[in-house]
Image (cartoon, rainbow, N blue to C red; front, side):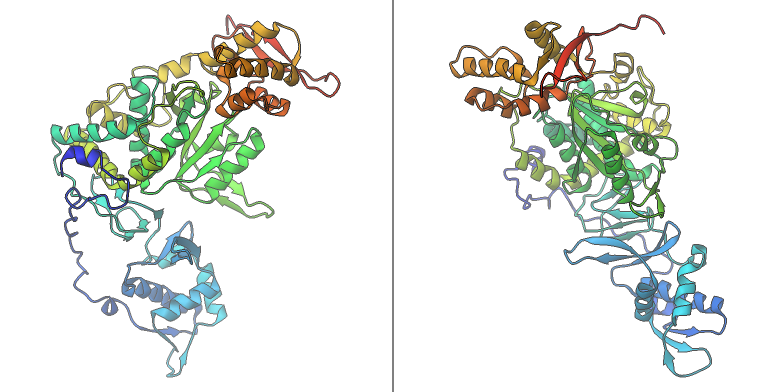
Length: 561
């Protein structure tokens, strides 16, 4: 198979022939105890002692034995101060469940036979022992490994090696939920290897209409970040995707990156206009220990950074939350990689130091999009290319490490809260030839923190129609319906509809557009001060009859601090 065939497979099916590209991993070096049968390392008979501390020690040995004899490797772990077990659910997925009294009884019974100390009769741990074992300090179970979490794909370690076999990976603490066929990573990658990786990433990212080379390089940084995420104990910056129009591919870009990094298409979480609802979404993702969180389709003007998101992406990244309806709290110890996408993202000044930006600049919604593959084809390809993507990240990481880890410095801007992330991500990509990575950081932090030029064009178009007179959604509807009628007759496509989504355009042309739909569309621009705009849309408190009224208000410029 040639490299071009790898980059452009003839089908998007799962039968993508990886055999020639993905050869088996070399056998891992055997540990000192590999030759000792597991049953010889730990006893198979356990005793209930008169002293509860001695009995708890027997529980410890029983759990260690269960891990040793398990055909799929360790299944009992320590996590966040408690004992847990990795189990298969009815739908074939994996889950982490705490060992309460009943689950602990089942686990220790699987490990061997229980007897009363100095007596022959077979027994089992009583409830008092099980309760004591659950309440014992977690340090008592030092033979039980620590679980960092579940991982769905091939896992890149910090030394450039890759874990790809299902089961527990002692080097990282993650439990891999499936086997991934994987190629050997070159010990010392060559410039040709790096060129191949660049070509491979260029093919799949070439589907998207990036506003600049910096945006393209930042998209590769997002993929590298997703693959390298387990290497960073603390938080990492937010990846923001700003679109100039709906259907520009922001959601698709985030899904493709997630599928490339983890081998499965990630879930998306619908963003809310309400700050309190956004906070609930973020807290839920923290509680569920998700690693790749997509906050999807943020509406123009929405404040998408509740305090909990800022807390999760700064300092230690740990967030204390309370379970809804209870007084019990939980602490997030596994920071996520947050992805936010939307049209004309309103980026506040205090957020610019905690994010990196990718801008997509697509044609207007009514024009033909230029994707070479369908959404389904592109996502299927990304899932199939998961091993190659992780292999490519490993090649880039080792290539940078072989060069002595050259220092990376931002050309402008500031990301000082994430020094290790900046050192590794920027250093790896800059050394591999993505010289524009994070080059737009200074622009993001110095420009007015609002939306881009198209929003200013929309406000100017509204002002050309209404001036500074009050108007309602019903009045705007008449303008849009008139534009739709002109389009239907083929008399031109200029006007306010250029800034609407495709559904609104079709409805306007058909004459079925409603004032409710127009009001919802207009609401997305209320209060947003677009960069370069002379006016902004304001909603008045008083109504005219039953109609909500809007007005264009001049923007007051701040000339000094």
